[in-house]
Length: 433
Image (cartoon, rainbow, N blue to C red; front, side, top):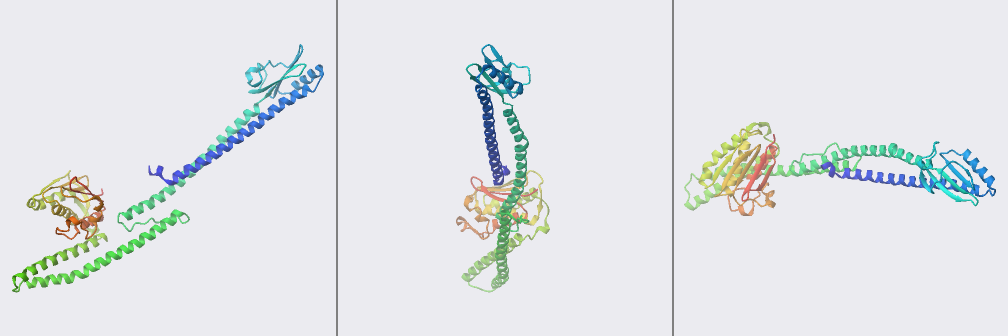
């Protein structure tokens, strides 16, 4: 279907149509011009015979001359009938003027397919001249042969060349389109590769690869800067947490102890944030694939539902799950557990008082809640690191839960989609076979 909508195919069809139109018009014009010329020549021959006989005044001489013409002429080329008084030269019957079919002549000898008949009053005498039109029929046969042996093979050859060009061009266009889609999906290592050296598509391919390389380098630099900052700050913050913990062993006023507890909580949250940032950066870099193995997705979902059942019950939430049997996928069990846990915790945080449902259909993991959901224009935003919607800023969290889910899903080659549960949020993650 894509091939039918492709620009190269449309251009090829247009060019073939234009070629066919011009060839057809040219052949038609040539046919009509030559046919008119042949018809004029046939008419001229008839008129010449009429004028030749009209120029002879004596009836006997005119009859003799008509007999000579009949004797010298091939019946396929010309038939003649001259009547003067009670004398008639020629065996052709009386014929109507104009173009007639050969059967109207009633002659047994070989005759043409059709004749042009001209009648003339020679005073004295009546003359009928029928000139054969075989040349016109032969012209039609010639043009039919040209159509069959020249135009049609040319169209077939042109179409075959067009199909080859369309397939090659479509393959290059699809390679460019696929690379763009892959880049848009976040895989910055995608390249068109092996572009044709001497075409505009080759230039576009090289420009696209250069752009992807620059984007990958810039994104990699940003990720590295973020990872370096998180790594460099992690150690001093951990030291700060140790020192704050050590202060707990000293006698402090009650107000100071409350401030110390708050400082400990916030420091722990900062450490968790940095730890999550580092892990996301590692996942985006491909770390973790070496531990992949078979994982029963259905059993894992059942285990995680059992683990969070008590927490859900305390929050007044009914947590359910539905499975369709053992479903082996390839991945890291710990990372997949983290993915499912983040989705459940996100639902518990933002969908209090509603039901949460986990399901595995085929190899697609579905988590659905009855909360406020996420607006369609914000669903890409919440998958970014440290992104939080305005409605959730008053709730605990760092804005890394769904970003971690996406990083784990991308590592496993599983597309993630956020949808509307009417009401609530539906998360679908489709794991590959």
